[in-house]
Image (tube, rainbow, N blue to C red; front, side, top):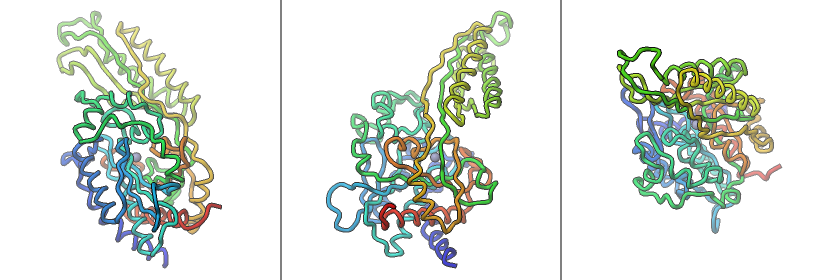
Length: 421
Ligand SMILES: [Zn+2]
């Protein structure tokens, strides 16, 4: 009964917040979200975040890398926040993404703050809700730009020169958004300020549905990366050019797609070509160039390396057979993340009333993974009944979202009122 009452309480704070952003960046045709970093939709969501902070009398800070922090400080706290309990996620999306990937963690975080305040709980240490900038990397090609800059994993010089599909650099996009690109860089206060970062996220698979449980804790993130394959051939007439005279880069690309699938299957891994740019992109022209991006992920580092080595070698032989050039560029590689045991155990203890929570790995990247080299991190997953993600069909049941917000409130309560054991 108590639990039901608390879930009702979560619905009251969660649902209105969720409703406020439901239409932001949603494409009328596809129903998917196009919330790219520093786009109008992203700026609207940033303003919404600012409003959430203001409405709760939380101090809003945008750090040097565009990450947003809403601070709830203990009464009588003096000076900069230190040793904080931090929770949140990201607001940006992939092209035509779902509503939950990212925003669920931020809405749940504000809802958790509201639940604590409704219970009259005061923090004994600083609390922050955070929105990390450009997690998906949909616009500039590199994922987790905000958290990677903060930890120093991504050099500001490289970040500033990244270009979107229209040739606009991140530096230009920041300037247009009224930000100062010269400020980008590692955040030396991160380790001091943050005692733990807990990211609540929709599950991007069906592990929880298969065991009929609403929540899980994360064990690890598969190593993964992105590689650009640039096949260059020779444009020519699609009718008048004899097959034997062609240097068509589409063929080597197509063979490479099949190769990637076969090699991934052989290694129990995954490999995807999901983004392709074709030039000149004419129906009656043999392409001159095909640029395609490989996303590859595996359970461990040696398997991922073997997978990419095999795909690369076979792509080169496909290209050689057709007399075309191939350049391969590693755009970003993220090593395996094993989430530390201590914070996970503490989370499990504060959620003991939900029974033994499943502990599952994920093949999706997250800011929590990037940060785990620098600060203690943990993740909570909310059930996704279809497993569909990075799609307009991505979904979590309202009851599970409320359970997630309640769980985050329990975790927050335990962390900020009890000493570490
Ligand atoms: Zn996400």
